[in-house]
Amino acid sequence: MSLTFTPVIGIEVHIQLKTKSKVFCKCGTDYTNDPPNSHVCPVCMGLPGSLPVLNRSVVQQGMLAGLALNCHILPTTFFFRKSYYYPDLPKGFQITQSDLPIAAEGWLEIHDDAGKLKKIRINRLHLEEDVGKLHHSTTDGRLEGASTSFVDYNRSGLPLAEIVSEPDVSSAREAVEYVTSLRRRVRYSGASDVDLEKGMMRFDANVSVKCSDGRWGKRSEVKNMNSFRALERAIEYEIKRQSKILADGGEVSQETRHWNDAKGVTTGMRVKEFYRKFIVEPDLPPLVVSSHWVDETRARLPEMPIERAARYEKDMGLSETDAAVLTDSIDVARYFEDTVKSGANPQRAGNWVRTEVLRFVNEKQISVDDLTVKPASLAELLARVESGKLSTTQAKGVFEEMLTGLSIEDAIKKTGAVEGGVGAGALLVLVKSILAANPDVVEEIKSGKDTKGKKVKFLQGLIMREAKGQAKPDEAASAIEAALKDE
Ligand code: ADP
Ligand code: MG
Ligand code: ZN
Figure 1 (cartoon, rainbow, N blue to C red):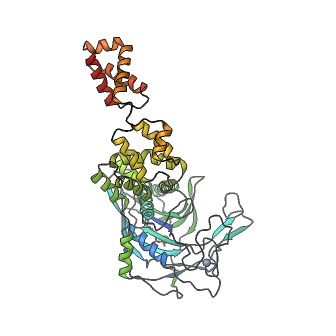
Figure 2: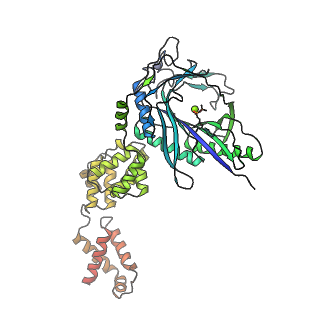
């Protein structure tokens, strides 16, 4: 009998909490265009004698993220010193809550590989500080072979939350859905911008494989994945590698492994250390949060994407796809909802935001909040489509002009769109001239040979073309009918 292998995967995600200053000092967190080591002080440089002071907004943001992930908040927690020596950590220890965290026992819902809903339990969310960044003089940026290395402490002391899942993930695809959903919910909460390119979200994957003969390999912790795609590939690679070892009768050892994206392989880094190297941080008091503060934070949490999408489907009659796209980010969801609140038909507004608005926003790489067309103006435009004053094609042209900053009236003038289309009288004249130019077609229709209505469709097409998008199909069809009766 052939052996089968079942992956067991746990994910650790680090997110950078969104605050103005670092976690234990007053240094700013935004150093985007600033030189290395320009946002540092004795505390985040780890100079002897400096004392950490906990930033209240870090706690606030950590709670917000925890609640967004269905965790409960622990009223009293501690900070520890996790000791290790490396140049990116000048103090010689990292301050972390580790497994006495501010938030615990959460969960996220994803779809398993068969499409069924499945819960991934979250063990905890704990607060900690980030470390500095090393720059090695090698072309690939790796330590091996570098003659010089530089350290930049701008990152040192940035506020992080580590979110540790239970080993409930069963495939690389599930892992990607898990981190995608986690990212979306955290971004909704406002706890972090979770920008992958800016290193605001990083993940490690713990992978082990169970064999159908009962053997269960040790887990490896895979690091250095910089994108969702890399996470997926690294896990797939690890599952294959470990399954092969077990299939060959070997043993998988517990270790930390490094994902090499260019080569598409993981390589061993160091054997995992088992001793606990934590002591309580004596310079920080226990962290106590009142139930009042927790309630206040919970009240600030916006409606989450899944619940919001369900509401769009149920109350507004949107399709599942439209609802999912519109709720992917909270600013788009709010833009859409404000358009509806300004009186737009939800389905029309949903469709419009999903296509016209998002196309423009994605193309220009801007946020919907920066659009010159505010929800109220979009609603006004859509109202004119609804009442038949503008055809959809005309409205699209008008919208383009509005995006350049024109008012709806000026945009209508500029595109030359005639409100109310070609007008009933003008339409009849147009239809008559087209019928006159196609006597053979008219004859066929009148003699009853056009049973499938193909010829009527043909005439309709001609009319639409002549009217240059300003006639509506059903109006054209009834005008044909009227004109034929007149003949
Ligand atoms: P560590 O200090 O080793 O990082 P953590 O508790 O922070 O320990 O993280 C352990 C991670 O490993 C969790 O995400 C957990 O779900 C995962 N894990 C635990 N057991 C297994 C296993 N047998 N196979 C795969 N992942 C596992
Ligand atoms: Mg860990
Ligand atoms: Zn500092």
